[in-house]
Amino acid sequence: MLGKIIDWLSDLFDRFSRFTIVLLFAIAFVSVLYQVFSRYVLQGTYVSDAFPSIDFSVFTFPWMEEFIRYLFVWIVFLGIGVVYKRKGHAQVELLTAFLAKRWRRRVGIIVEMINAGFFLLLLVKGYSMLKLTNGQLSPSLQINMVWMYLSILVCSIICLAHSVASLMKEVRAQSNPDVEQSEPQSTELAEIEEPIKTKLSI
Image (cartoon, rainbow, N blue to C red; front, side):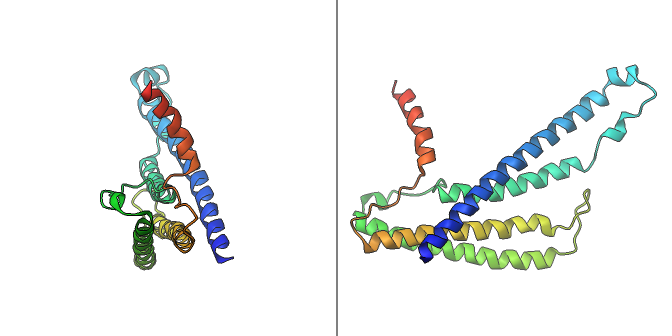
């Protein structure tokens, strides 16, 4: 029962992360386009000569560059959780490749326990960082910097849920030898990589 709840939370966090990343990317893309348009078109020589009585500098927002930078901060930290769930981070498999399946599962359990401990520590330190930065304002947007450092806390919670879910799967696989070890990549990535491998072989 507990394992199903953890798996459900992990999947829920993953869907939330992917949706939010797409949304933030879209906002950042539109913001970059507008910033380029307002800087090099509206304030260009041709537009200034065509409409000399209009001050197009009012359409340039100096805070937009900082806004885009903070969007990418959230995109990166949310992306860490998305990649971690699919085991997409760099891994050293030189030693585990020579181990038997049973010992590979045991090593996987140890690794996930270390990861879970790290994310738990990151959660505690992230909360301390929030209290430390509360009240500090960003230079241009003048927003509380807590909203920026909150990305660390959210990232640690999401990754901790993914790590615990993966750990419980490894424990179940260890207790039941007939269950195959969970694949490091999701079926979504496998479906993407299969056509690529086919094209490369051709």
